[in-house]
Length: 375
Image 1 (tube, rainbow, N blue to C red):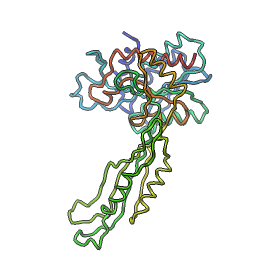
Image 2: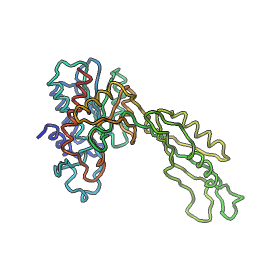
Image 3: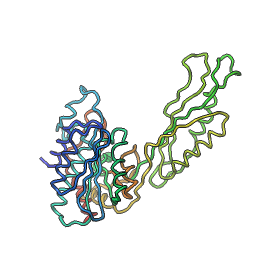
Image 4: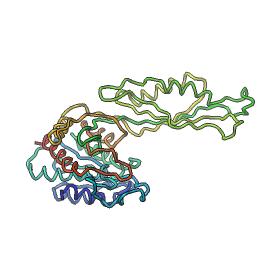
């Protein structure tokens, strides 16, 4: 059995539903210590984080990822138990098989092979793992990055093992992610009897033209890597439940998915400018869950795409689609952050899996990337 497959199965067998690490990072730590890494467990709340580094020279290449997984969903719907790794039909099944315990196993074995083959390589290698990526993400990677920044550790390259491929291993890598900013807009009216509208002020009516303008606004044009920024409503709450009462307020939840073509401050200002044109009082509570990041074509993307081409023959596309990831935190202290991992078709689903034929090639791509950057 391949060492990568064996380690992936061992990690999948640990039921690390976020934020419980269930010993995954301790298992990784044992492997890295044998390779000469200095390992540091950083506990924050009920979240476990691992920072492990070998070497002090630059450039520093960091492998990043998460040991936590999403809940299984109904156990009876799984063909085999989610935390009993099972091989069948040419695939490895289990929660975390694709997102992202196989990536972690591949990174570790790739590092073992690289160090054995090139003991005098330049630069340094590090691992940053958290058990808080699938949860609120407030005690995980962001905490480690703040600590690294405070003590002046400089990161040059980071590969996050998120499942980025679509149809086959290596067809897509993520060189950035959109930011996510939500708002809760409360538009204020005057409650009253529906038969006497002249004595009330209906916030539902007041909101309609303003919301229509927000929905049709062109926020930016995007850029080479990003589609234009999107503003979407997710919830509207208004009314008392009675059919004869004009409500006193309406609450609208909305979200921006925005690129590096816009700024948080600029988007907020334009929302206020639009709302201020209308005759109503309002309040907005903003929540920023992620800033956008972008790694333009350069050393890291070139090294990774060459590794993919050498191993699989596939020409990788750069993409910034999808939701947020911990790359948004790492990008604050590292100029070149790329996400790359196995196909993502089964992630978060019942019977999550990865094709067995992709496991060792994934490891080889990580090792080849190390060679491209540190030799």
